[in-house]
Length: 256
View 1: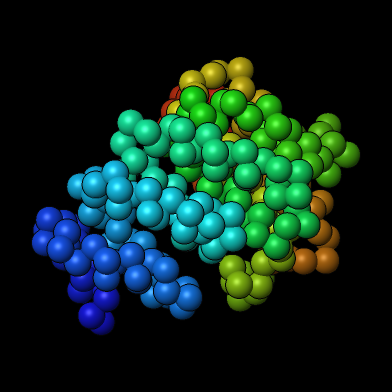
View 2 (view 1 turned 180 degrees about the vertical axis):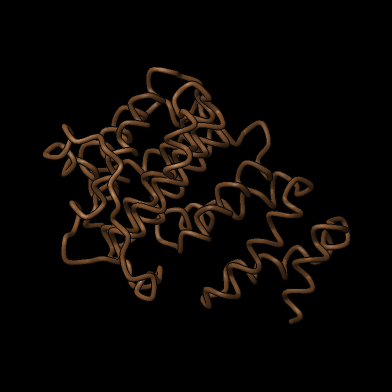
């Protein structure tokens, strides 16, 4: 409860936490994931007012969260880097990006691939110029490696009814591969919202349409994976349609 109160207060009175900086850093470095995540939220709220010296002392820890932390920690680490480093954030992101796109890191076999993709998605949102340095490799991984299985169904573009038992639809039951694909979809949306491209948006729309209509083609024996992919694709199509109003007509919207 105490940490929750501090987290809420830090959004209103960030300056009150400046004298307690060392204590906040100790929270972020705590081995307990729940404690370090709360510390990270507090740091994110007060980050804009930290000195460059304080910011640099946290660089290694924040980068570690992006590579090996939870998806939640990865997200807020990227947002905190953008906040506390100011004009020098781009160089920090460039160093981090090199680590994120290494062959042994950007692979579905990586147990932390969900966090890696979450980090890349928020780098696209916070520092698109940096993301674009490796955009070809990242997009190739998402589209060809994670969703390459859709090639066999590419000719069928009809929205199909693939509803399953909703009682089984719990995120904790999703497979590792499914979670990676959910993050891949989110990454594509972050990228396209920041980088306006009608041609790329139409391509991603067709991909998402296939994910939605052929959700069972990923894993025919896992209804939970199929339902989660279907729901994620539908939400992504609607979000993409808000930015690119020409790619989603009324009939398709109603079917979703």
